[in-house]
Image (cartoon, rainbow, N blue to C red; front, side, top):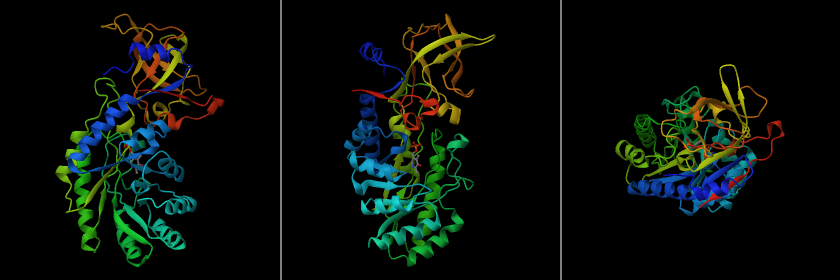
Length: 389
Ligand SMILES: *Cc1c(COP(=O)(O)O)cnc(C)c1O
């Protein structure tokens, strides 16, 4: 699949850079493939809004019947505004404020994913004030290693997320007495950009243990929420534009023991939106160092922070210079931004066609955790977005 057809390019060349470009056609295809794969097993997918909360994208995802996974009160409100149904909204996060909990209770969301023992009591108290019963799921820290970058690992005991196994007895005690809590399920999320499907097999085996543990204590759980984290191929944005959802869901079908009527919920962010987005930027200057060539762009870490934050790789393309087949006439560039920080580098030693001031550059697979993390540092212009069908 080719994202930048001559017609698209002609349009993009007219826009002021930097900006995010979203291919809504590719997004729609990705959503269709994911839905079809999940439907085979009756799995329910919630979209994790934090990956990208642009309204046209949320509307497209809501229209396909996905639920919403939110991590702030504002995300909950935006999800409802863009068409997600309140009884398909879940709310996670280690630090939900009282105000956020009260608002979500008033909006009758499906479920709070509770991340600490203390939070259980607080939600019970706040629900009592509204004379409501809050549906909750316990986010359990399964101690499964996601084998991904340490900064995006969440399911180990040393991470701040979730409730550790030795605290589950305390949770049960609270749940047996709390009149305003209804335990609907258990929730897990091991990390992000997980490419090794064996990680999800390990997760399934842990979920089975907890599912039985709760049954033994009289809780017949309605929902097993296994979170998100499915990774994408940052190295082949055109060849592998759509993640292999089939193999992913198959692992859960194979290894998760569901009792009759038990629902399985997923929370996917990156795998749904990453490939559809790219950061478009122009070359400002080419600077020759002693051993290096620097390509200085008009976009930097303020527009796309992932390389600086997680040493993340994004493929970089010069859209103004046709790619030669052997790249023999290319040059290696350290591709950097304009921000006053030495770490403001997208990638080092990138082989590109010989480039010049004014060339249009695409930084690919930037639809997830890209625009949402943009900042105004150095008093940069607010970032804008361009959408194509
Ligand atoms: C971030 C997050 C997700 C989505 O993660 P992806 O790696 O983007 O799929 C799902 N669930 C929770 C609780 C999260 O915090």
